[in-house]
Length: 354
Image 1 (cartoon, rainbow, N blue to C red):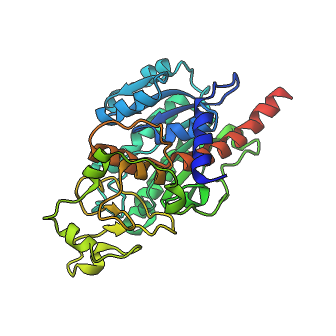
Image 2: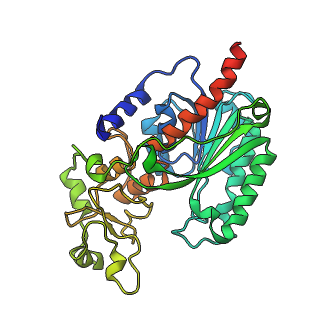
Image 3: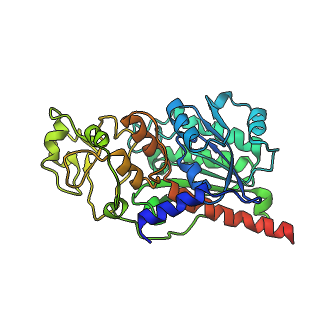
């Protein structure tokens, strides 16, 4: 089965009715719904999503009209309100998922130790206490285990364990889980202590496949004339002049002595893409460019690289839609992780039935 066929089959799994015994999930920092789509592809019943950005929230609502959405500051969402919206009592939720904003940890940012965004994970921990789920999954960038950020990583582990969970954390690369993008993410998996004491230890899915190439990802992709027009660079921009000199697989800073174009990259069609960054569609310096045409890639092409099905709706400007893709955990990546966690939790259900 080709990559587009696998993506379409996963989309059909998302659209399928939920079974009566479907595991439940609540998604914090939900964005446009990348993680939510992965859970849905794995058969989960999402009970609540939390997102503060209106444009990303609009995309989420367009794709998940039946999922309650809290649109606003997570700090203003009370424990009682969250439980009420999710129609759950403490301890009933199967999985709490979330990707606290990670710019303070990211290797692409300034990596300030006291960055306020590094503290948003405490809101995740607060709702972890409130829901007391059987398991949790928390995603972040691998930059949190490099240099001084390891101190924050240690704080995060300490807080998660103090909430009553056995925790495992590993860096996984999305390419080895069916995504045509070599995106590394720190994945925390936690299992509630009472379940861990019964032998259900947190763990991560094993690599499942060799990464698809950009060429495989784009087979049959459709670009509109409007999207192609937006993807072209203005002829006055330095990146426009540099792109003529770049070969597939080359970065723009190889041609710029001051390294001011970090991340400008002409994709190699026969390899998976590097990480699609959130600011690449804003005219910044992190733009993924077409292997042979003189332009950045389109949203339709970026969706394929991010493992978003063609029918997934993204709203907003080019930059806002690109940011939505760059901010998300790739859906096929999250499907693999959530399917693994579902297998862990199935052990508890089997014990209960016995």
